[in-house]
Length: 471
Image 1 (cartoon, rainbow, N blue to C red):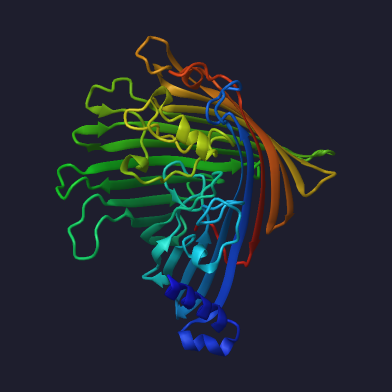
Image 2 (cartoon, rainbow, N blue to C red):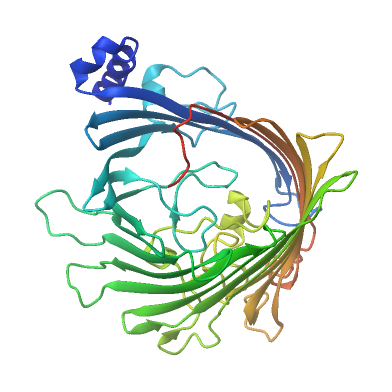
């Protein structure tokens, strides 16, 4: 690692004067990056009980730093290296729990390389990217590896080959193939590997003001060296999105279907994702936006058969591939997601995508939101969001085998105040409250029906024009 840090230092030094670029064989070096800070004060995430004697409060400030280095390698070939620092928080360094300053040796363990790729401008009309990279689309239900929108400010990336073809006006094709994990060193027979592929066809001209997307995703995870026990999951997707009257009304609709098997159990889940938005004409007090979304992911009503009818994403293979979060608490709270997974039959983190685990109960989410951009504060915004969470199949609420079946998880309301100082500087703060229902409020340890409350604040500073979260 010391050699890596030394190499990074050399790159910075070499970029200070343009004649030095030739020494590294690189031209046109540029830098970009971002610094994000997320502060959270939360209560009742642990036990959903105001009267419990256990500790159920937390007050944390997490940070995420990204620094990108871009260069022209040769004609038609560029490169990017992105260094990231996350997973630490205010008041705690990497080696101890006290708030002592970190030295360079301690910092080495927190700095990671999440981008390290070369990009070919056009090869036979195809743009190609090879190496560690962010892939997928932000807010995608099944396919996204990029900086996450969670309280911990975590980051995901994929070692992959990505291809884009867009030479035809009526068809755009994108393909990605990569490894989410590799269990063996070089020259060894591999097992317990996770390989992923995604193929998308975008038809941008068939619908006025809209587009159609058809996709196929495939993943496999080897359990042993034998191919007979591989975990194979396929996801088919078909969607449409667009707008009318100059996006006064926007819409989207997408269907997902599972195929494949694990040890003789077939994947047969499905999901439907719908959304509509209104961008109203600006009034004397400001502009208003209204949105409504509905997600329905199937559940399994018979865990004893050989079919898994609950909708699955690539978490079924051990790869977290969804960037969709539902609510400040239910979706973005890493602590809540970890501590209520055993309630109501969940075996995957709730609120992140729609995968509720093997033969899980499924998930249904209704979301209604409204935003106001006031005239008297042109850089400010106010957003109010309401969520209702249910399972698709009833489950035993207290895991005791009794007949008190329920499909009710809870509801959440979020209030967010935003301030966009500039295109590169943004701030937001707000309050969220999650109200647990039967599947969380009733448990083996007694009633858990008190609201989870959260105060939050975030600052995001970006610099450099070349940085994108994801292509």
